[in-house]
Image (cartoon, rainbow, N blue to C red; front, side, top):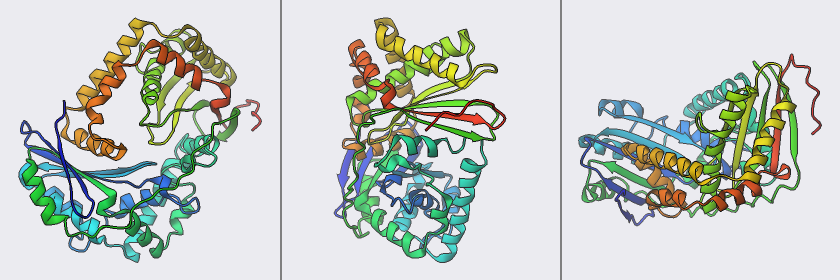
Length: 420
């Protein structure tokens, strides 16, 4: 059980405190409720750009990293479709340094043409390095473009094209900052060797006088059910052919999300999982195979990806995967196998809770979902999953009409291209 307390400042900043006097350190996490799904289709990559801009200095802090390091700490951030998250870890006695830094960039980020130009170059280079020059780097551009027709998950966090960030103006980014980076659109979590009273005092000192912004009222169109198989073939300079199958799954807050997450473990999480054991180890059809869920807030995707061994075509590889999926649907999963995967999930979750940083990040995320106490409920939800639940969801999602299929062909391959 992870105990915590919470309070809200008058400006709307939600604060969660987890007290743990067994560690000399403390983690401060700020989640901003803004991600790639909040961007305009013609101005993508902005949330990711801001992850970088938030480290470019503020009114009283020309360099964010130096004060944290001088205080014996570390910091980092991540962005995805749903959120932008910043975190600091440091000795408990130096916690106020993190409060000072985070409040200053929330109130008065240094957004000028020079800092914008620098960070645009960094982000564009990252796009080129990870998406254009890295083997299989643009896979998500293809998969999301096929799987989503109306929902903004149809572009990846890094953006549709680098030109969207290249063309970002100072006015564009200031508008984005003013709209989303405000206390009433953020959740602050402090976990570690602290007390609620100490955190409340620091919040009053550093955050209470930051003005609230306009309420963030999302109007995102729900993705309609996919009605037919989507297929695409991409030729690129990659070491070997690869196949990707993407299936729509329920939203993150749904009980059925946990069922599907457990299905992904059954299929490919470790050496005893079905796809690994049957297709990689026994039949040697794949040199690599994996299965995972996106975990996005709105309905997301379960992905199966694999690279066939030499002499195995993508058509053969696909047929082998579908055979295993059909066996899962028809034969189901027995009690012993289900209990094994439940126990593995429980041990993984319990191990992750040993880190104060992980607890801070998860408390913020679950509070954004609606209730930070989900951190204590998840194990129970996994344990409540039945064989019937697994069979029901396997039959619901593993159908051709719910699938987006990508053949990724090495340019030297003579594979016959699949029609779109």
